[in-house]
Image 1 (cartoon, rainbow, N blue to C red):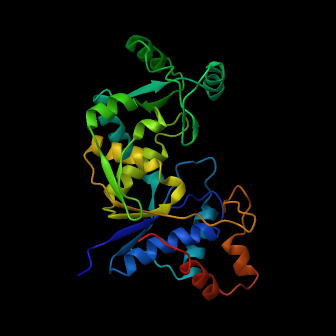
Image 2 (tube, helix red, strand yellow):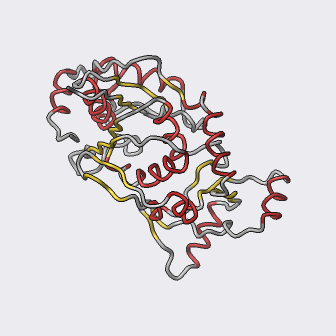
Image 3 (cartoon, rainbow, N blue to C red):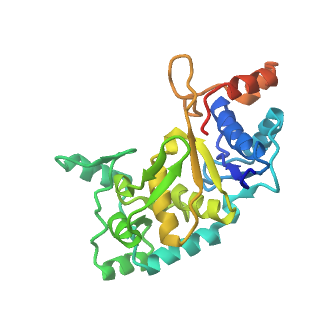
Length: 285
């Protein structure tokens, strides 16, 4: 008997979908449908400066063209800000986050001045400049309206959570090592949350049992597992799939200008051919 599976596809409406998105959506869709489960659609529209309503409509259009129907109404992160604030408030109450007033230029300058700045999966780690600020100074700067983000004190959080692990369909049981990311941002200066916090809260709120997403997010799972422990949230099973690349070996992406599904549709590309090609790709178990 198949276990009950709930998967999701969670694109950001900052541009039209390409084949890489289609593959990720197909992995999540087929994972649920082959086991009689539910496939959810979540629109990650926190970045209000880049997200566009027309791109939301484009996501619907592209998924329907691919024949990937979803269950229930799409969920929009922009409508869930109180949930993220409540999670952040819990971490504040536990003294596991701190305000960071640094600008990107200040962080870059401090890293450049360091003889051996530690690096993580996404590059040099935040040097912890604001971690040791006096509580009174923090409060005064916040009261004065100085822009600030909120960072997770990764060392303190790891101690509070204790040893952790998570399961990946391909890699097996993975020991959580969130410290490789340093003190990640959980709420940005220009947005009341970040990807790490929002995705963790949303997967739990939507009772997602299985997360199918690209291998580029494998390392982020270390942070998500830590947040799940700190917030008392369940841990889904992860299925990190390979990333599709262009003929030159470059990863498909919006930034690289990869051909969109809309352009393929306009050119008369047969959707059945696309689906056959995508389903022939190695997918996570």
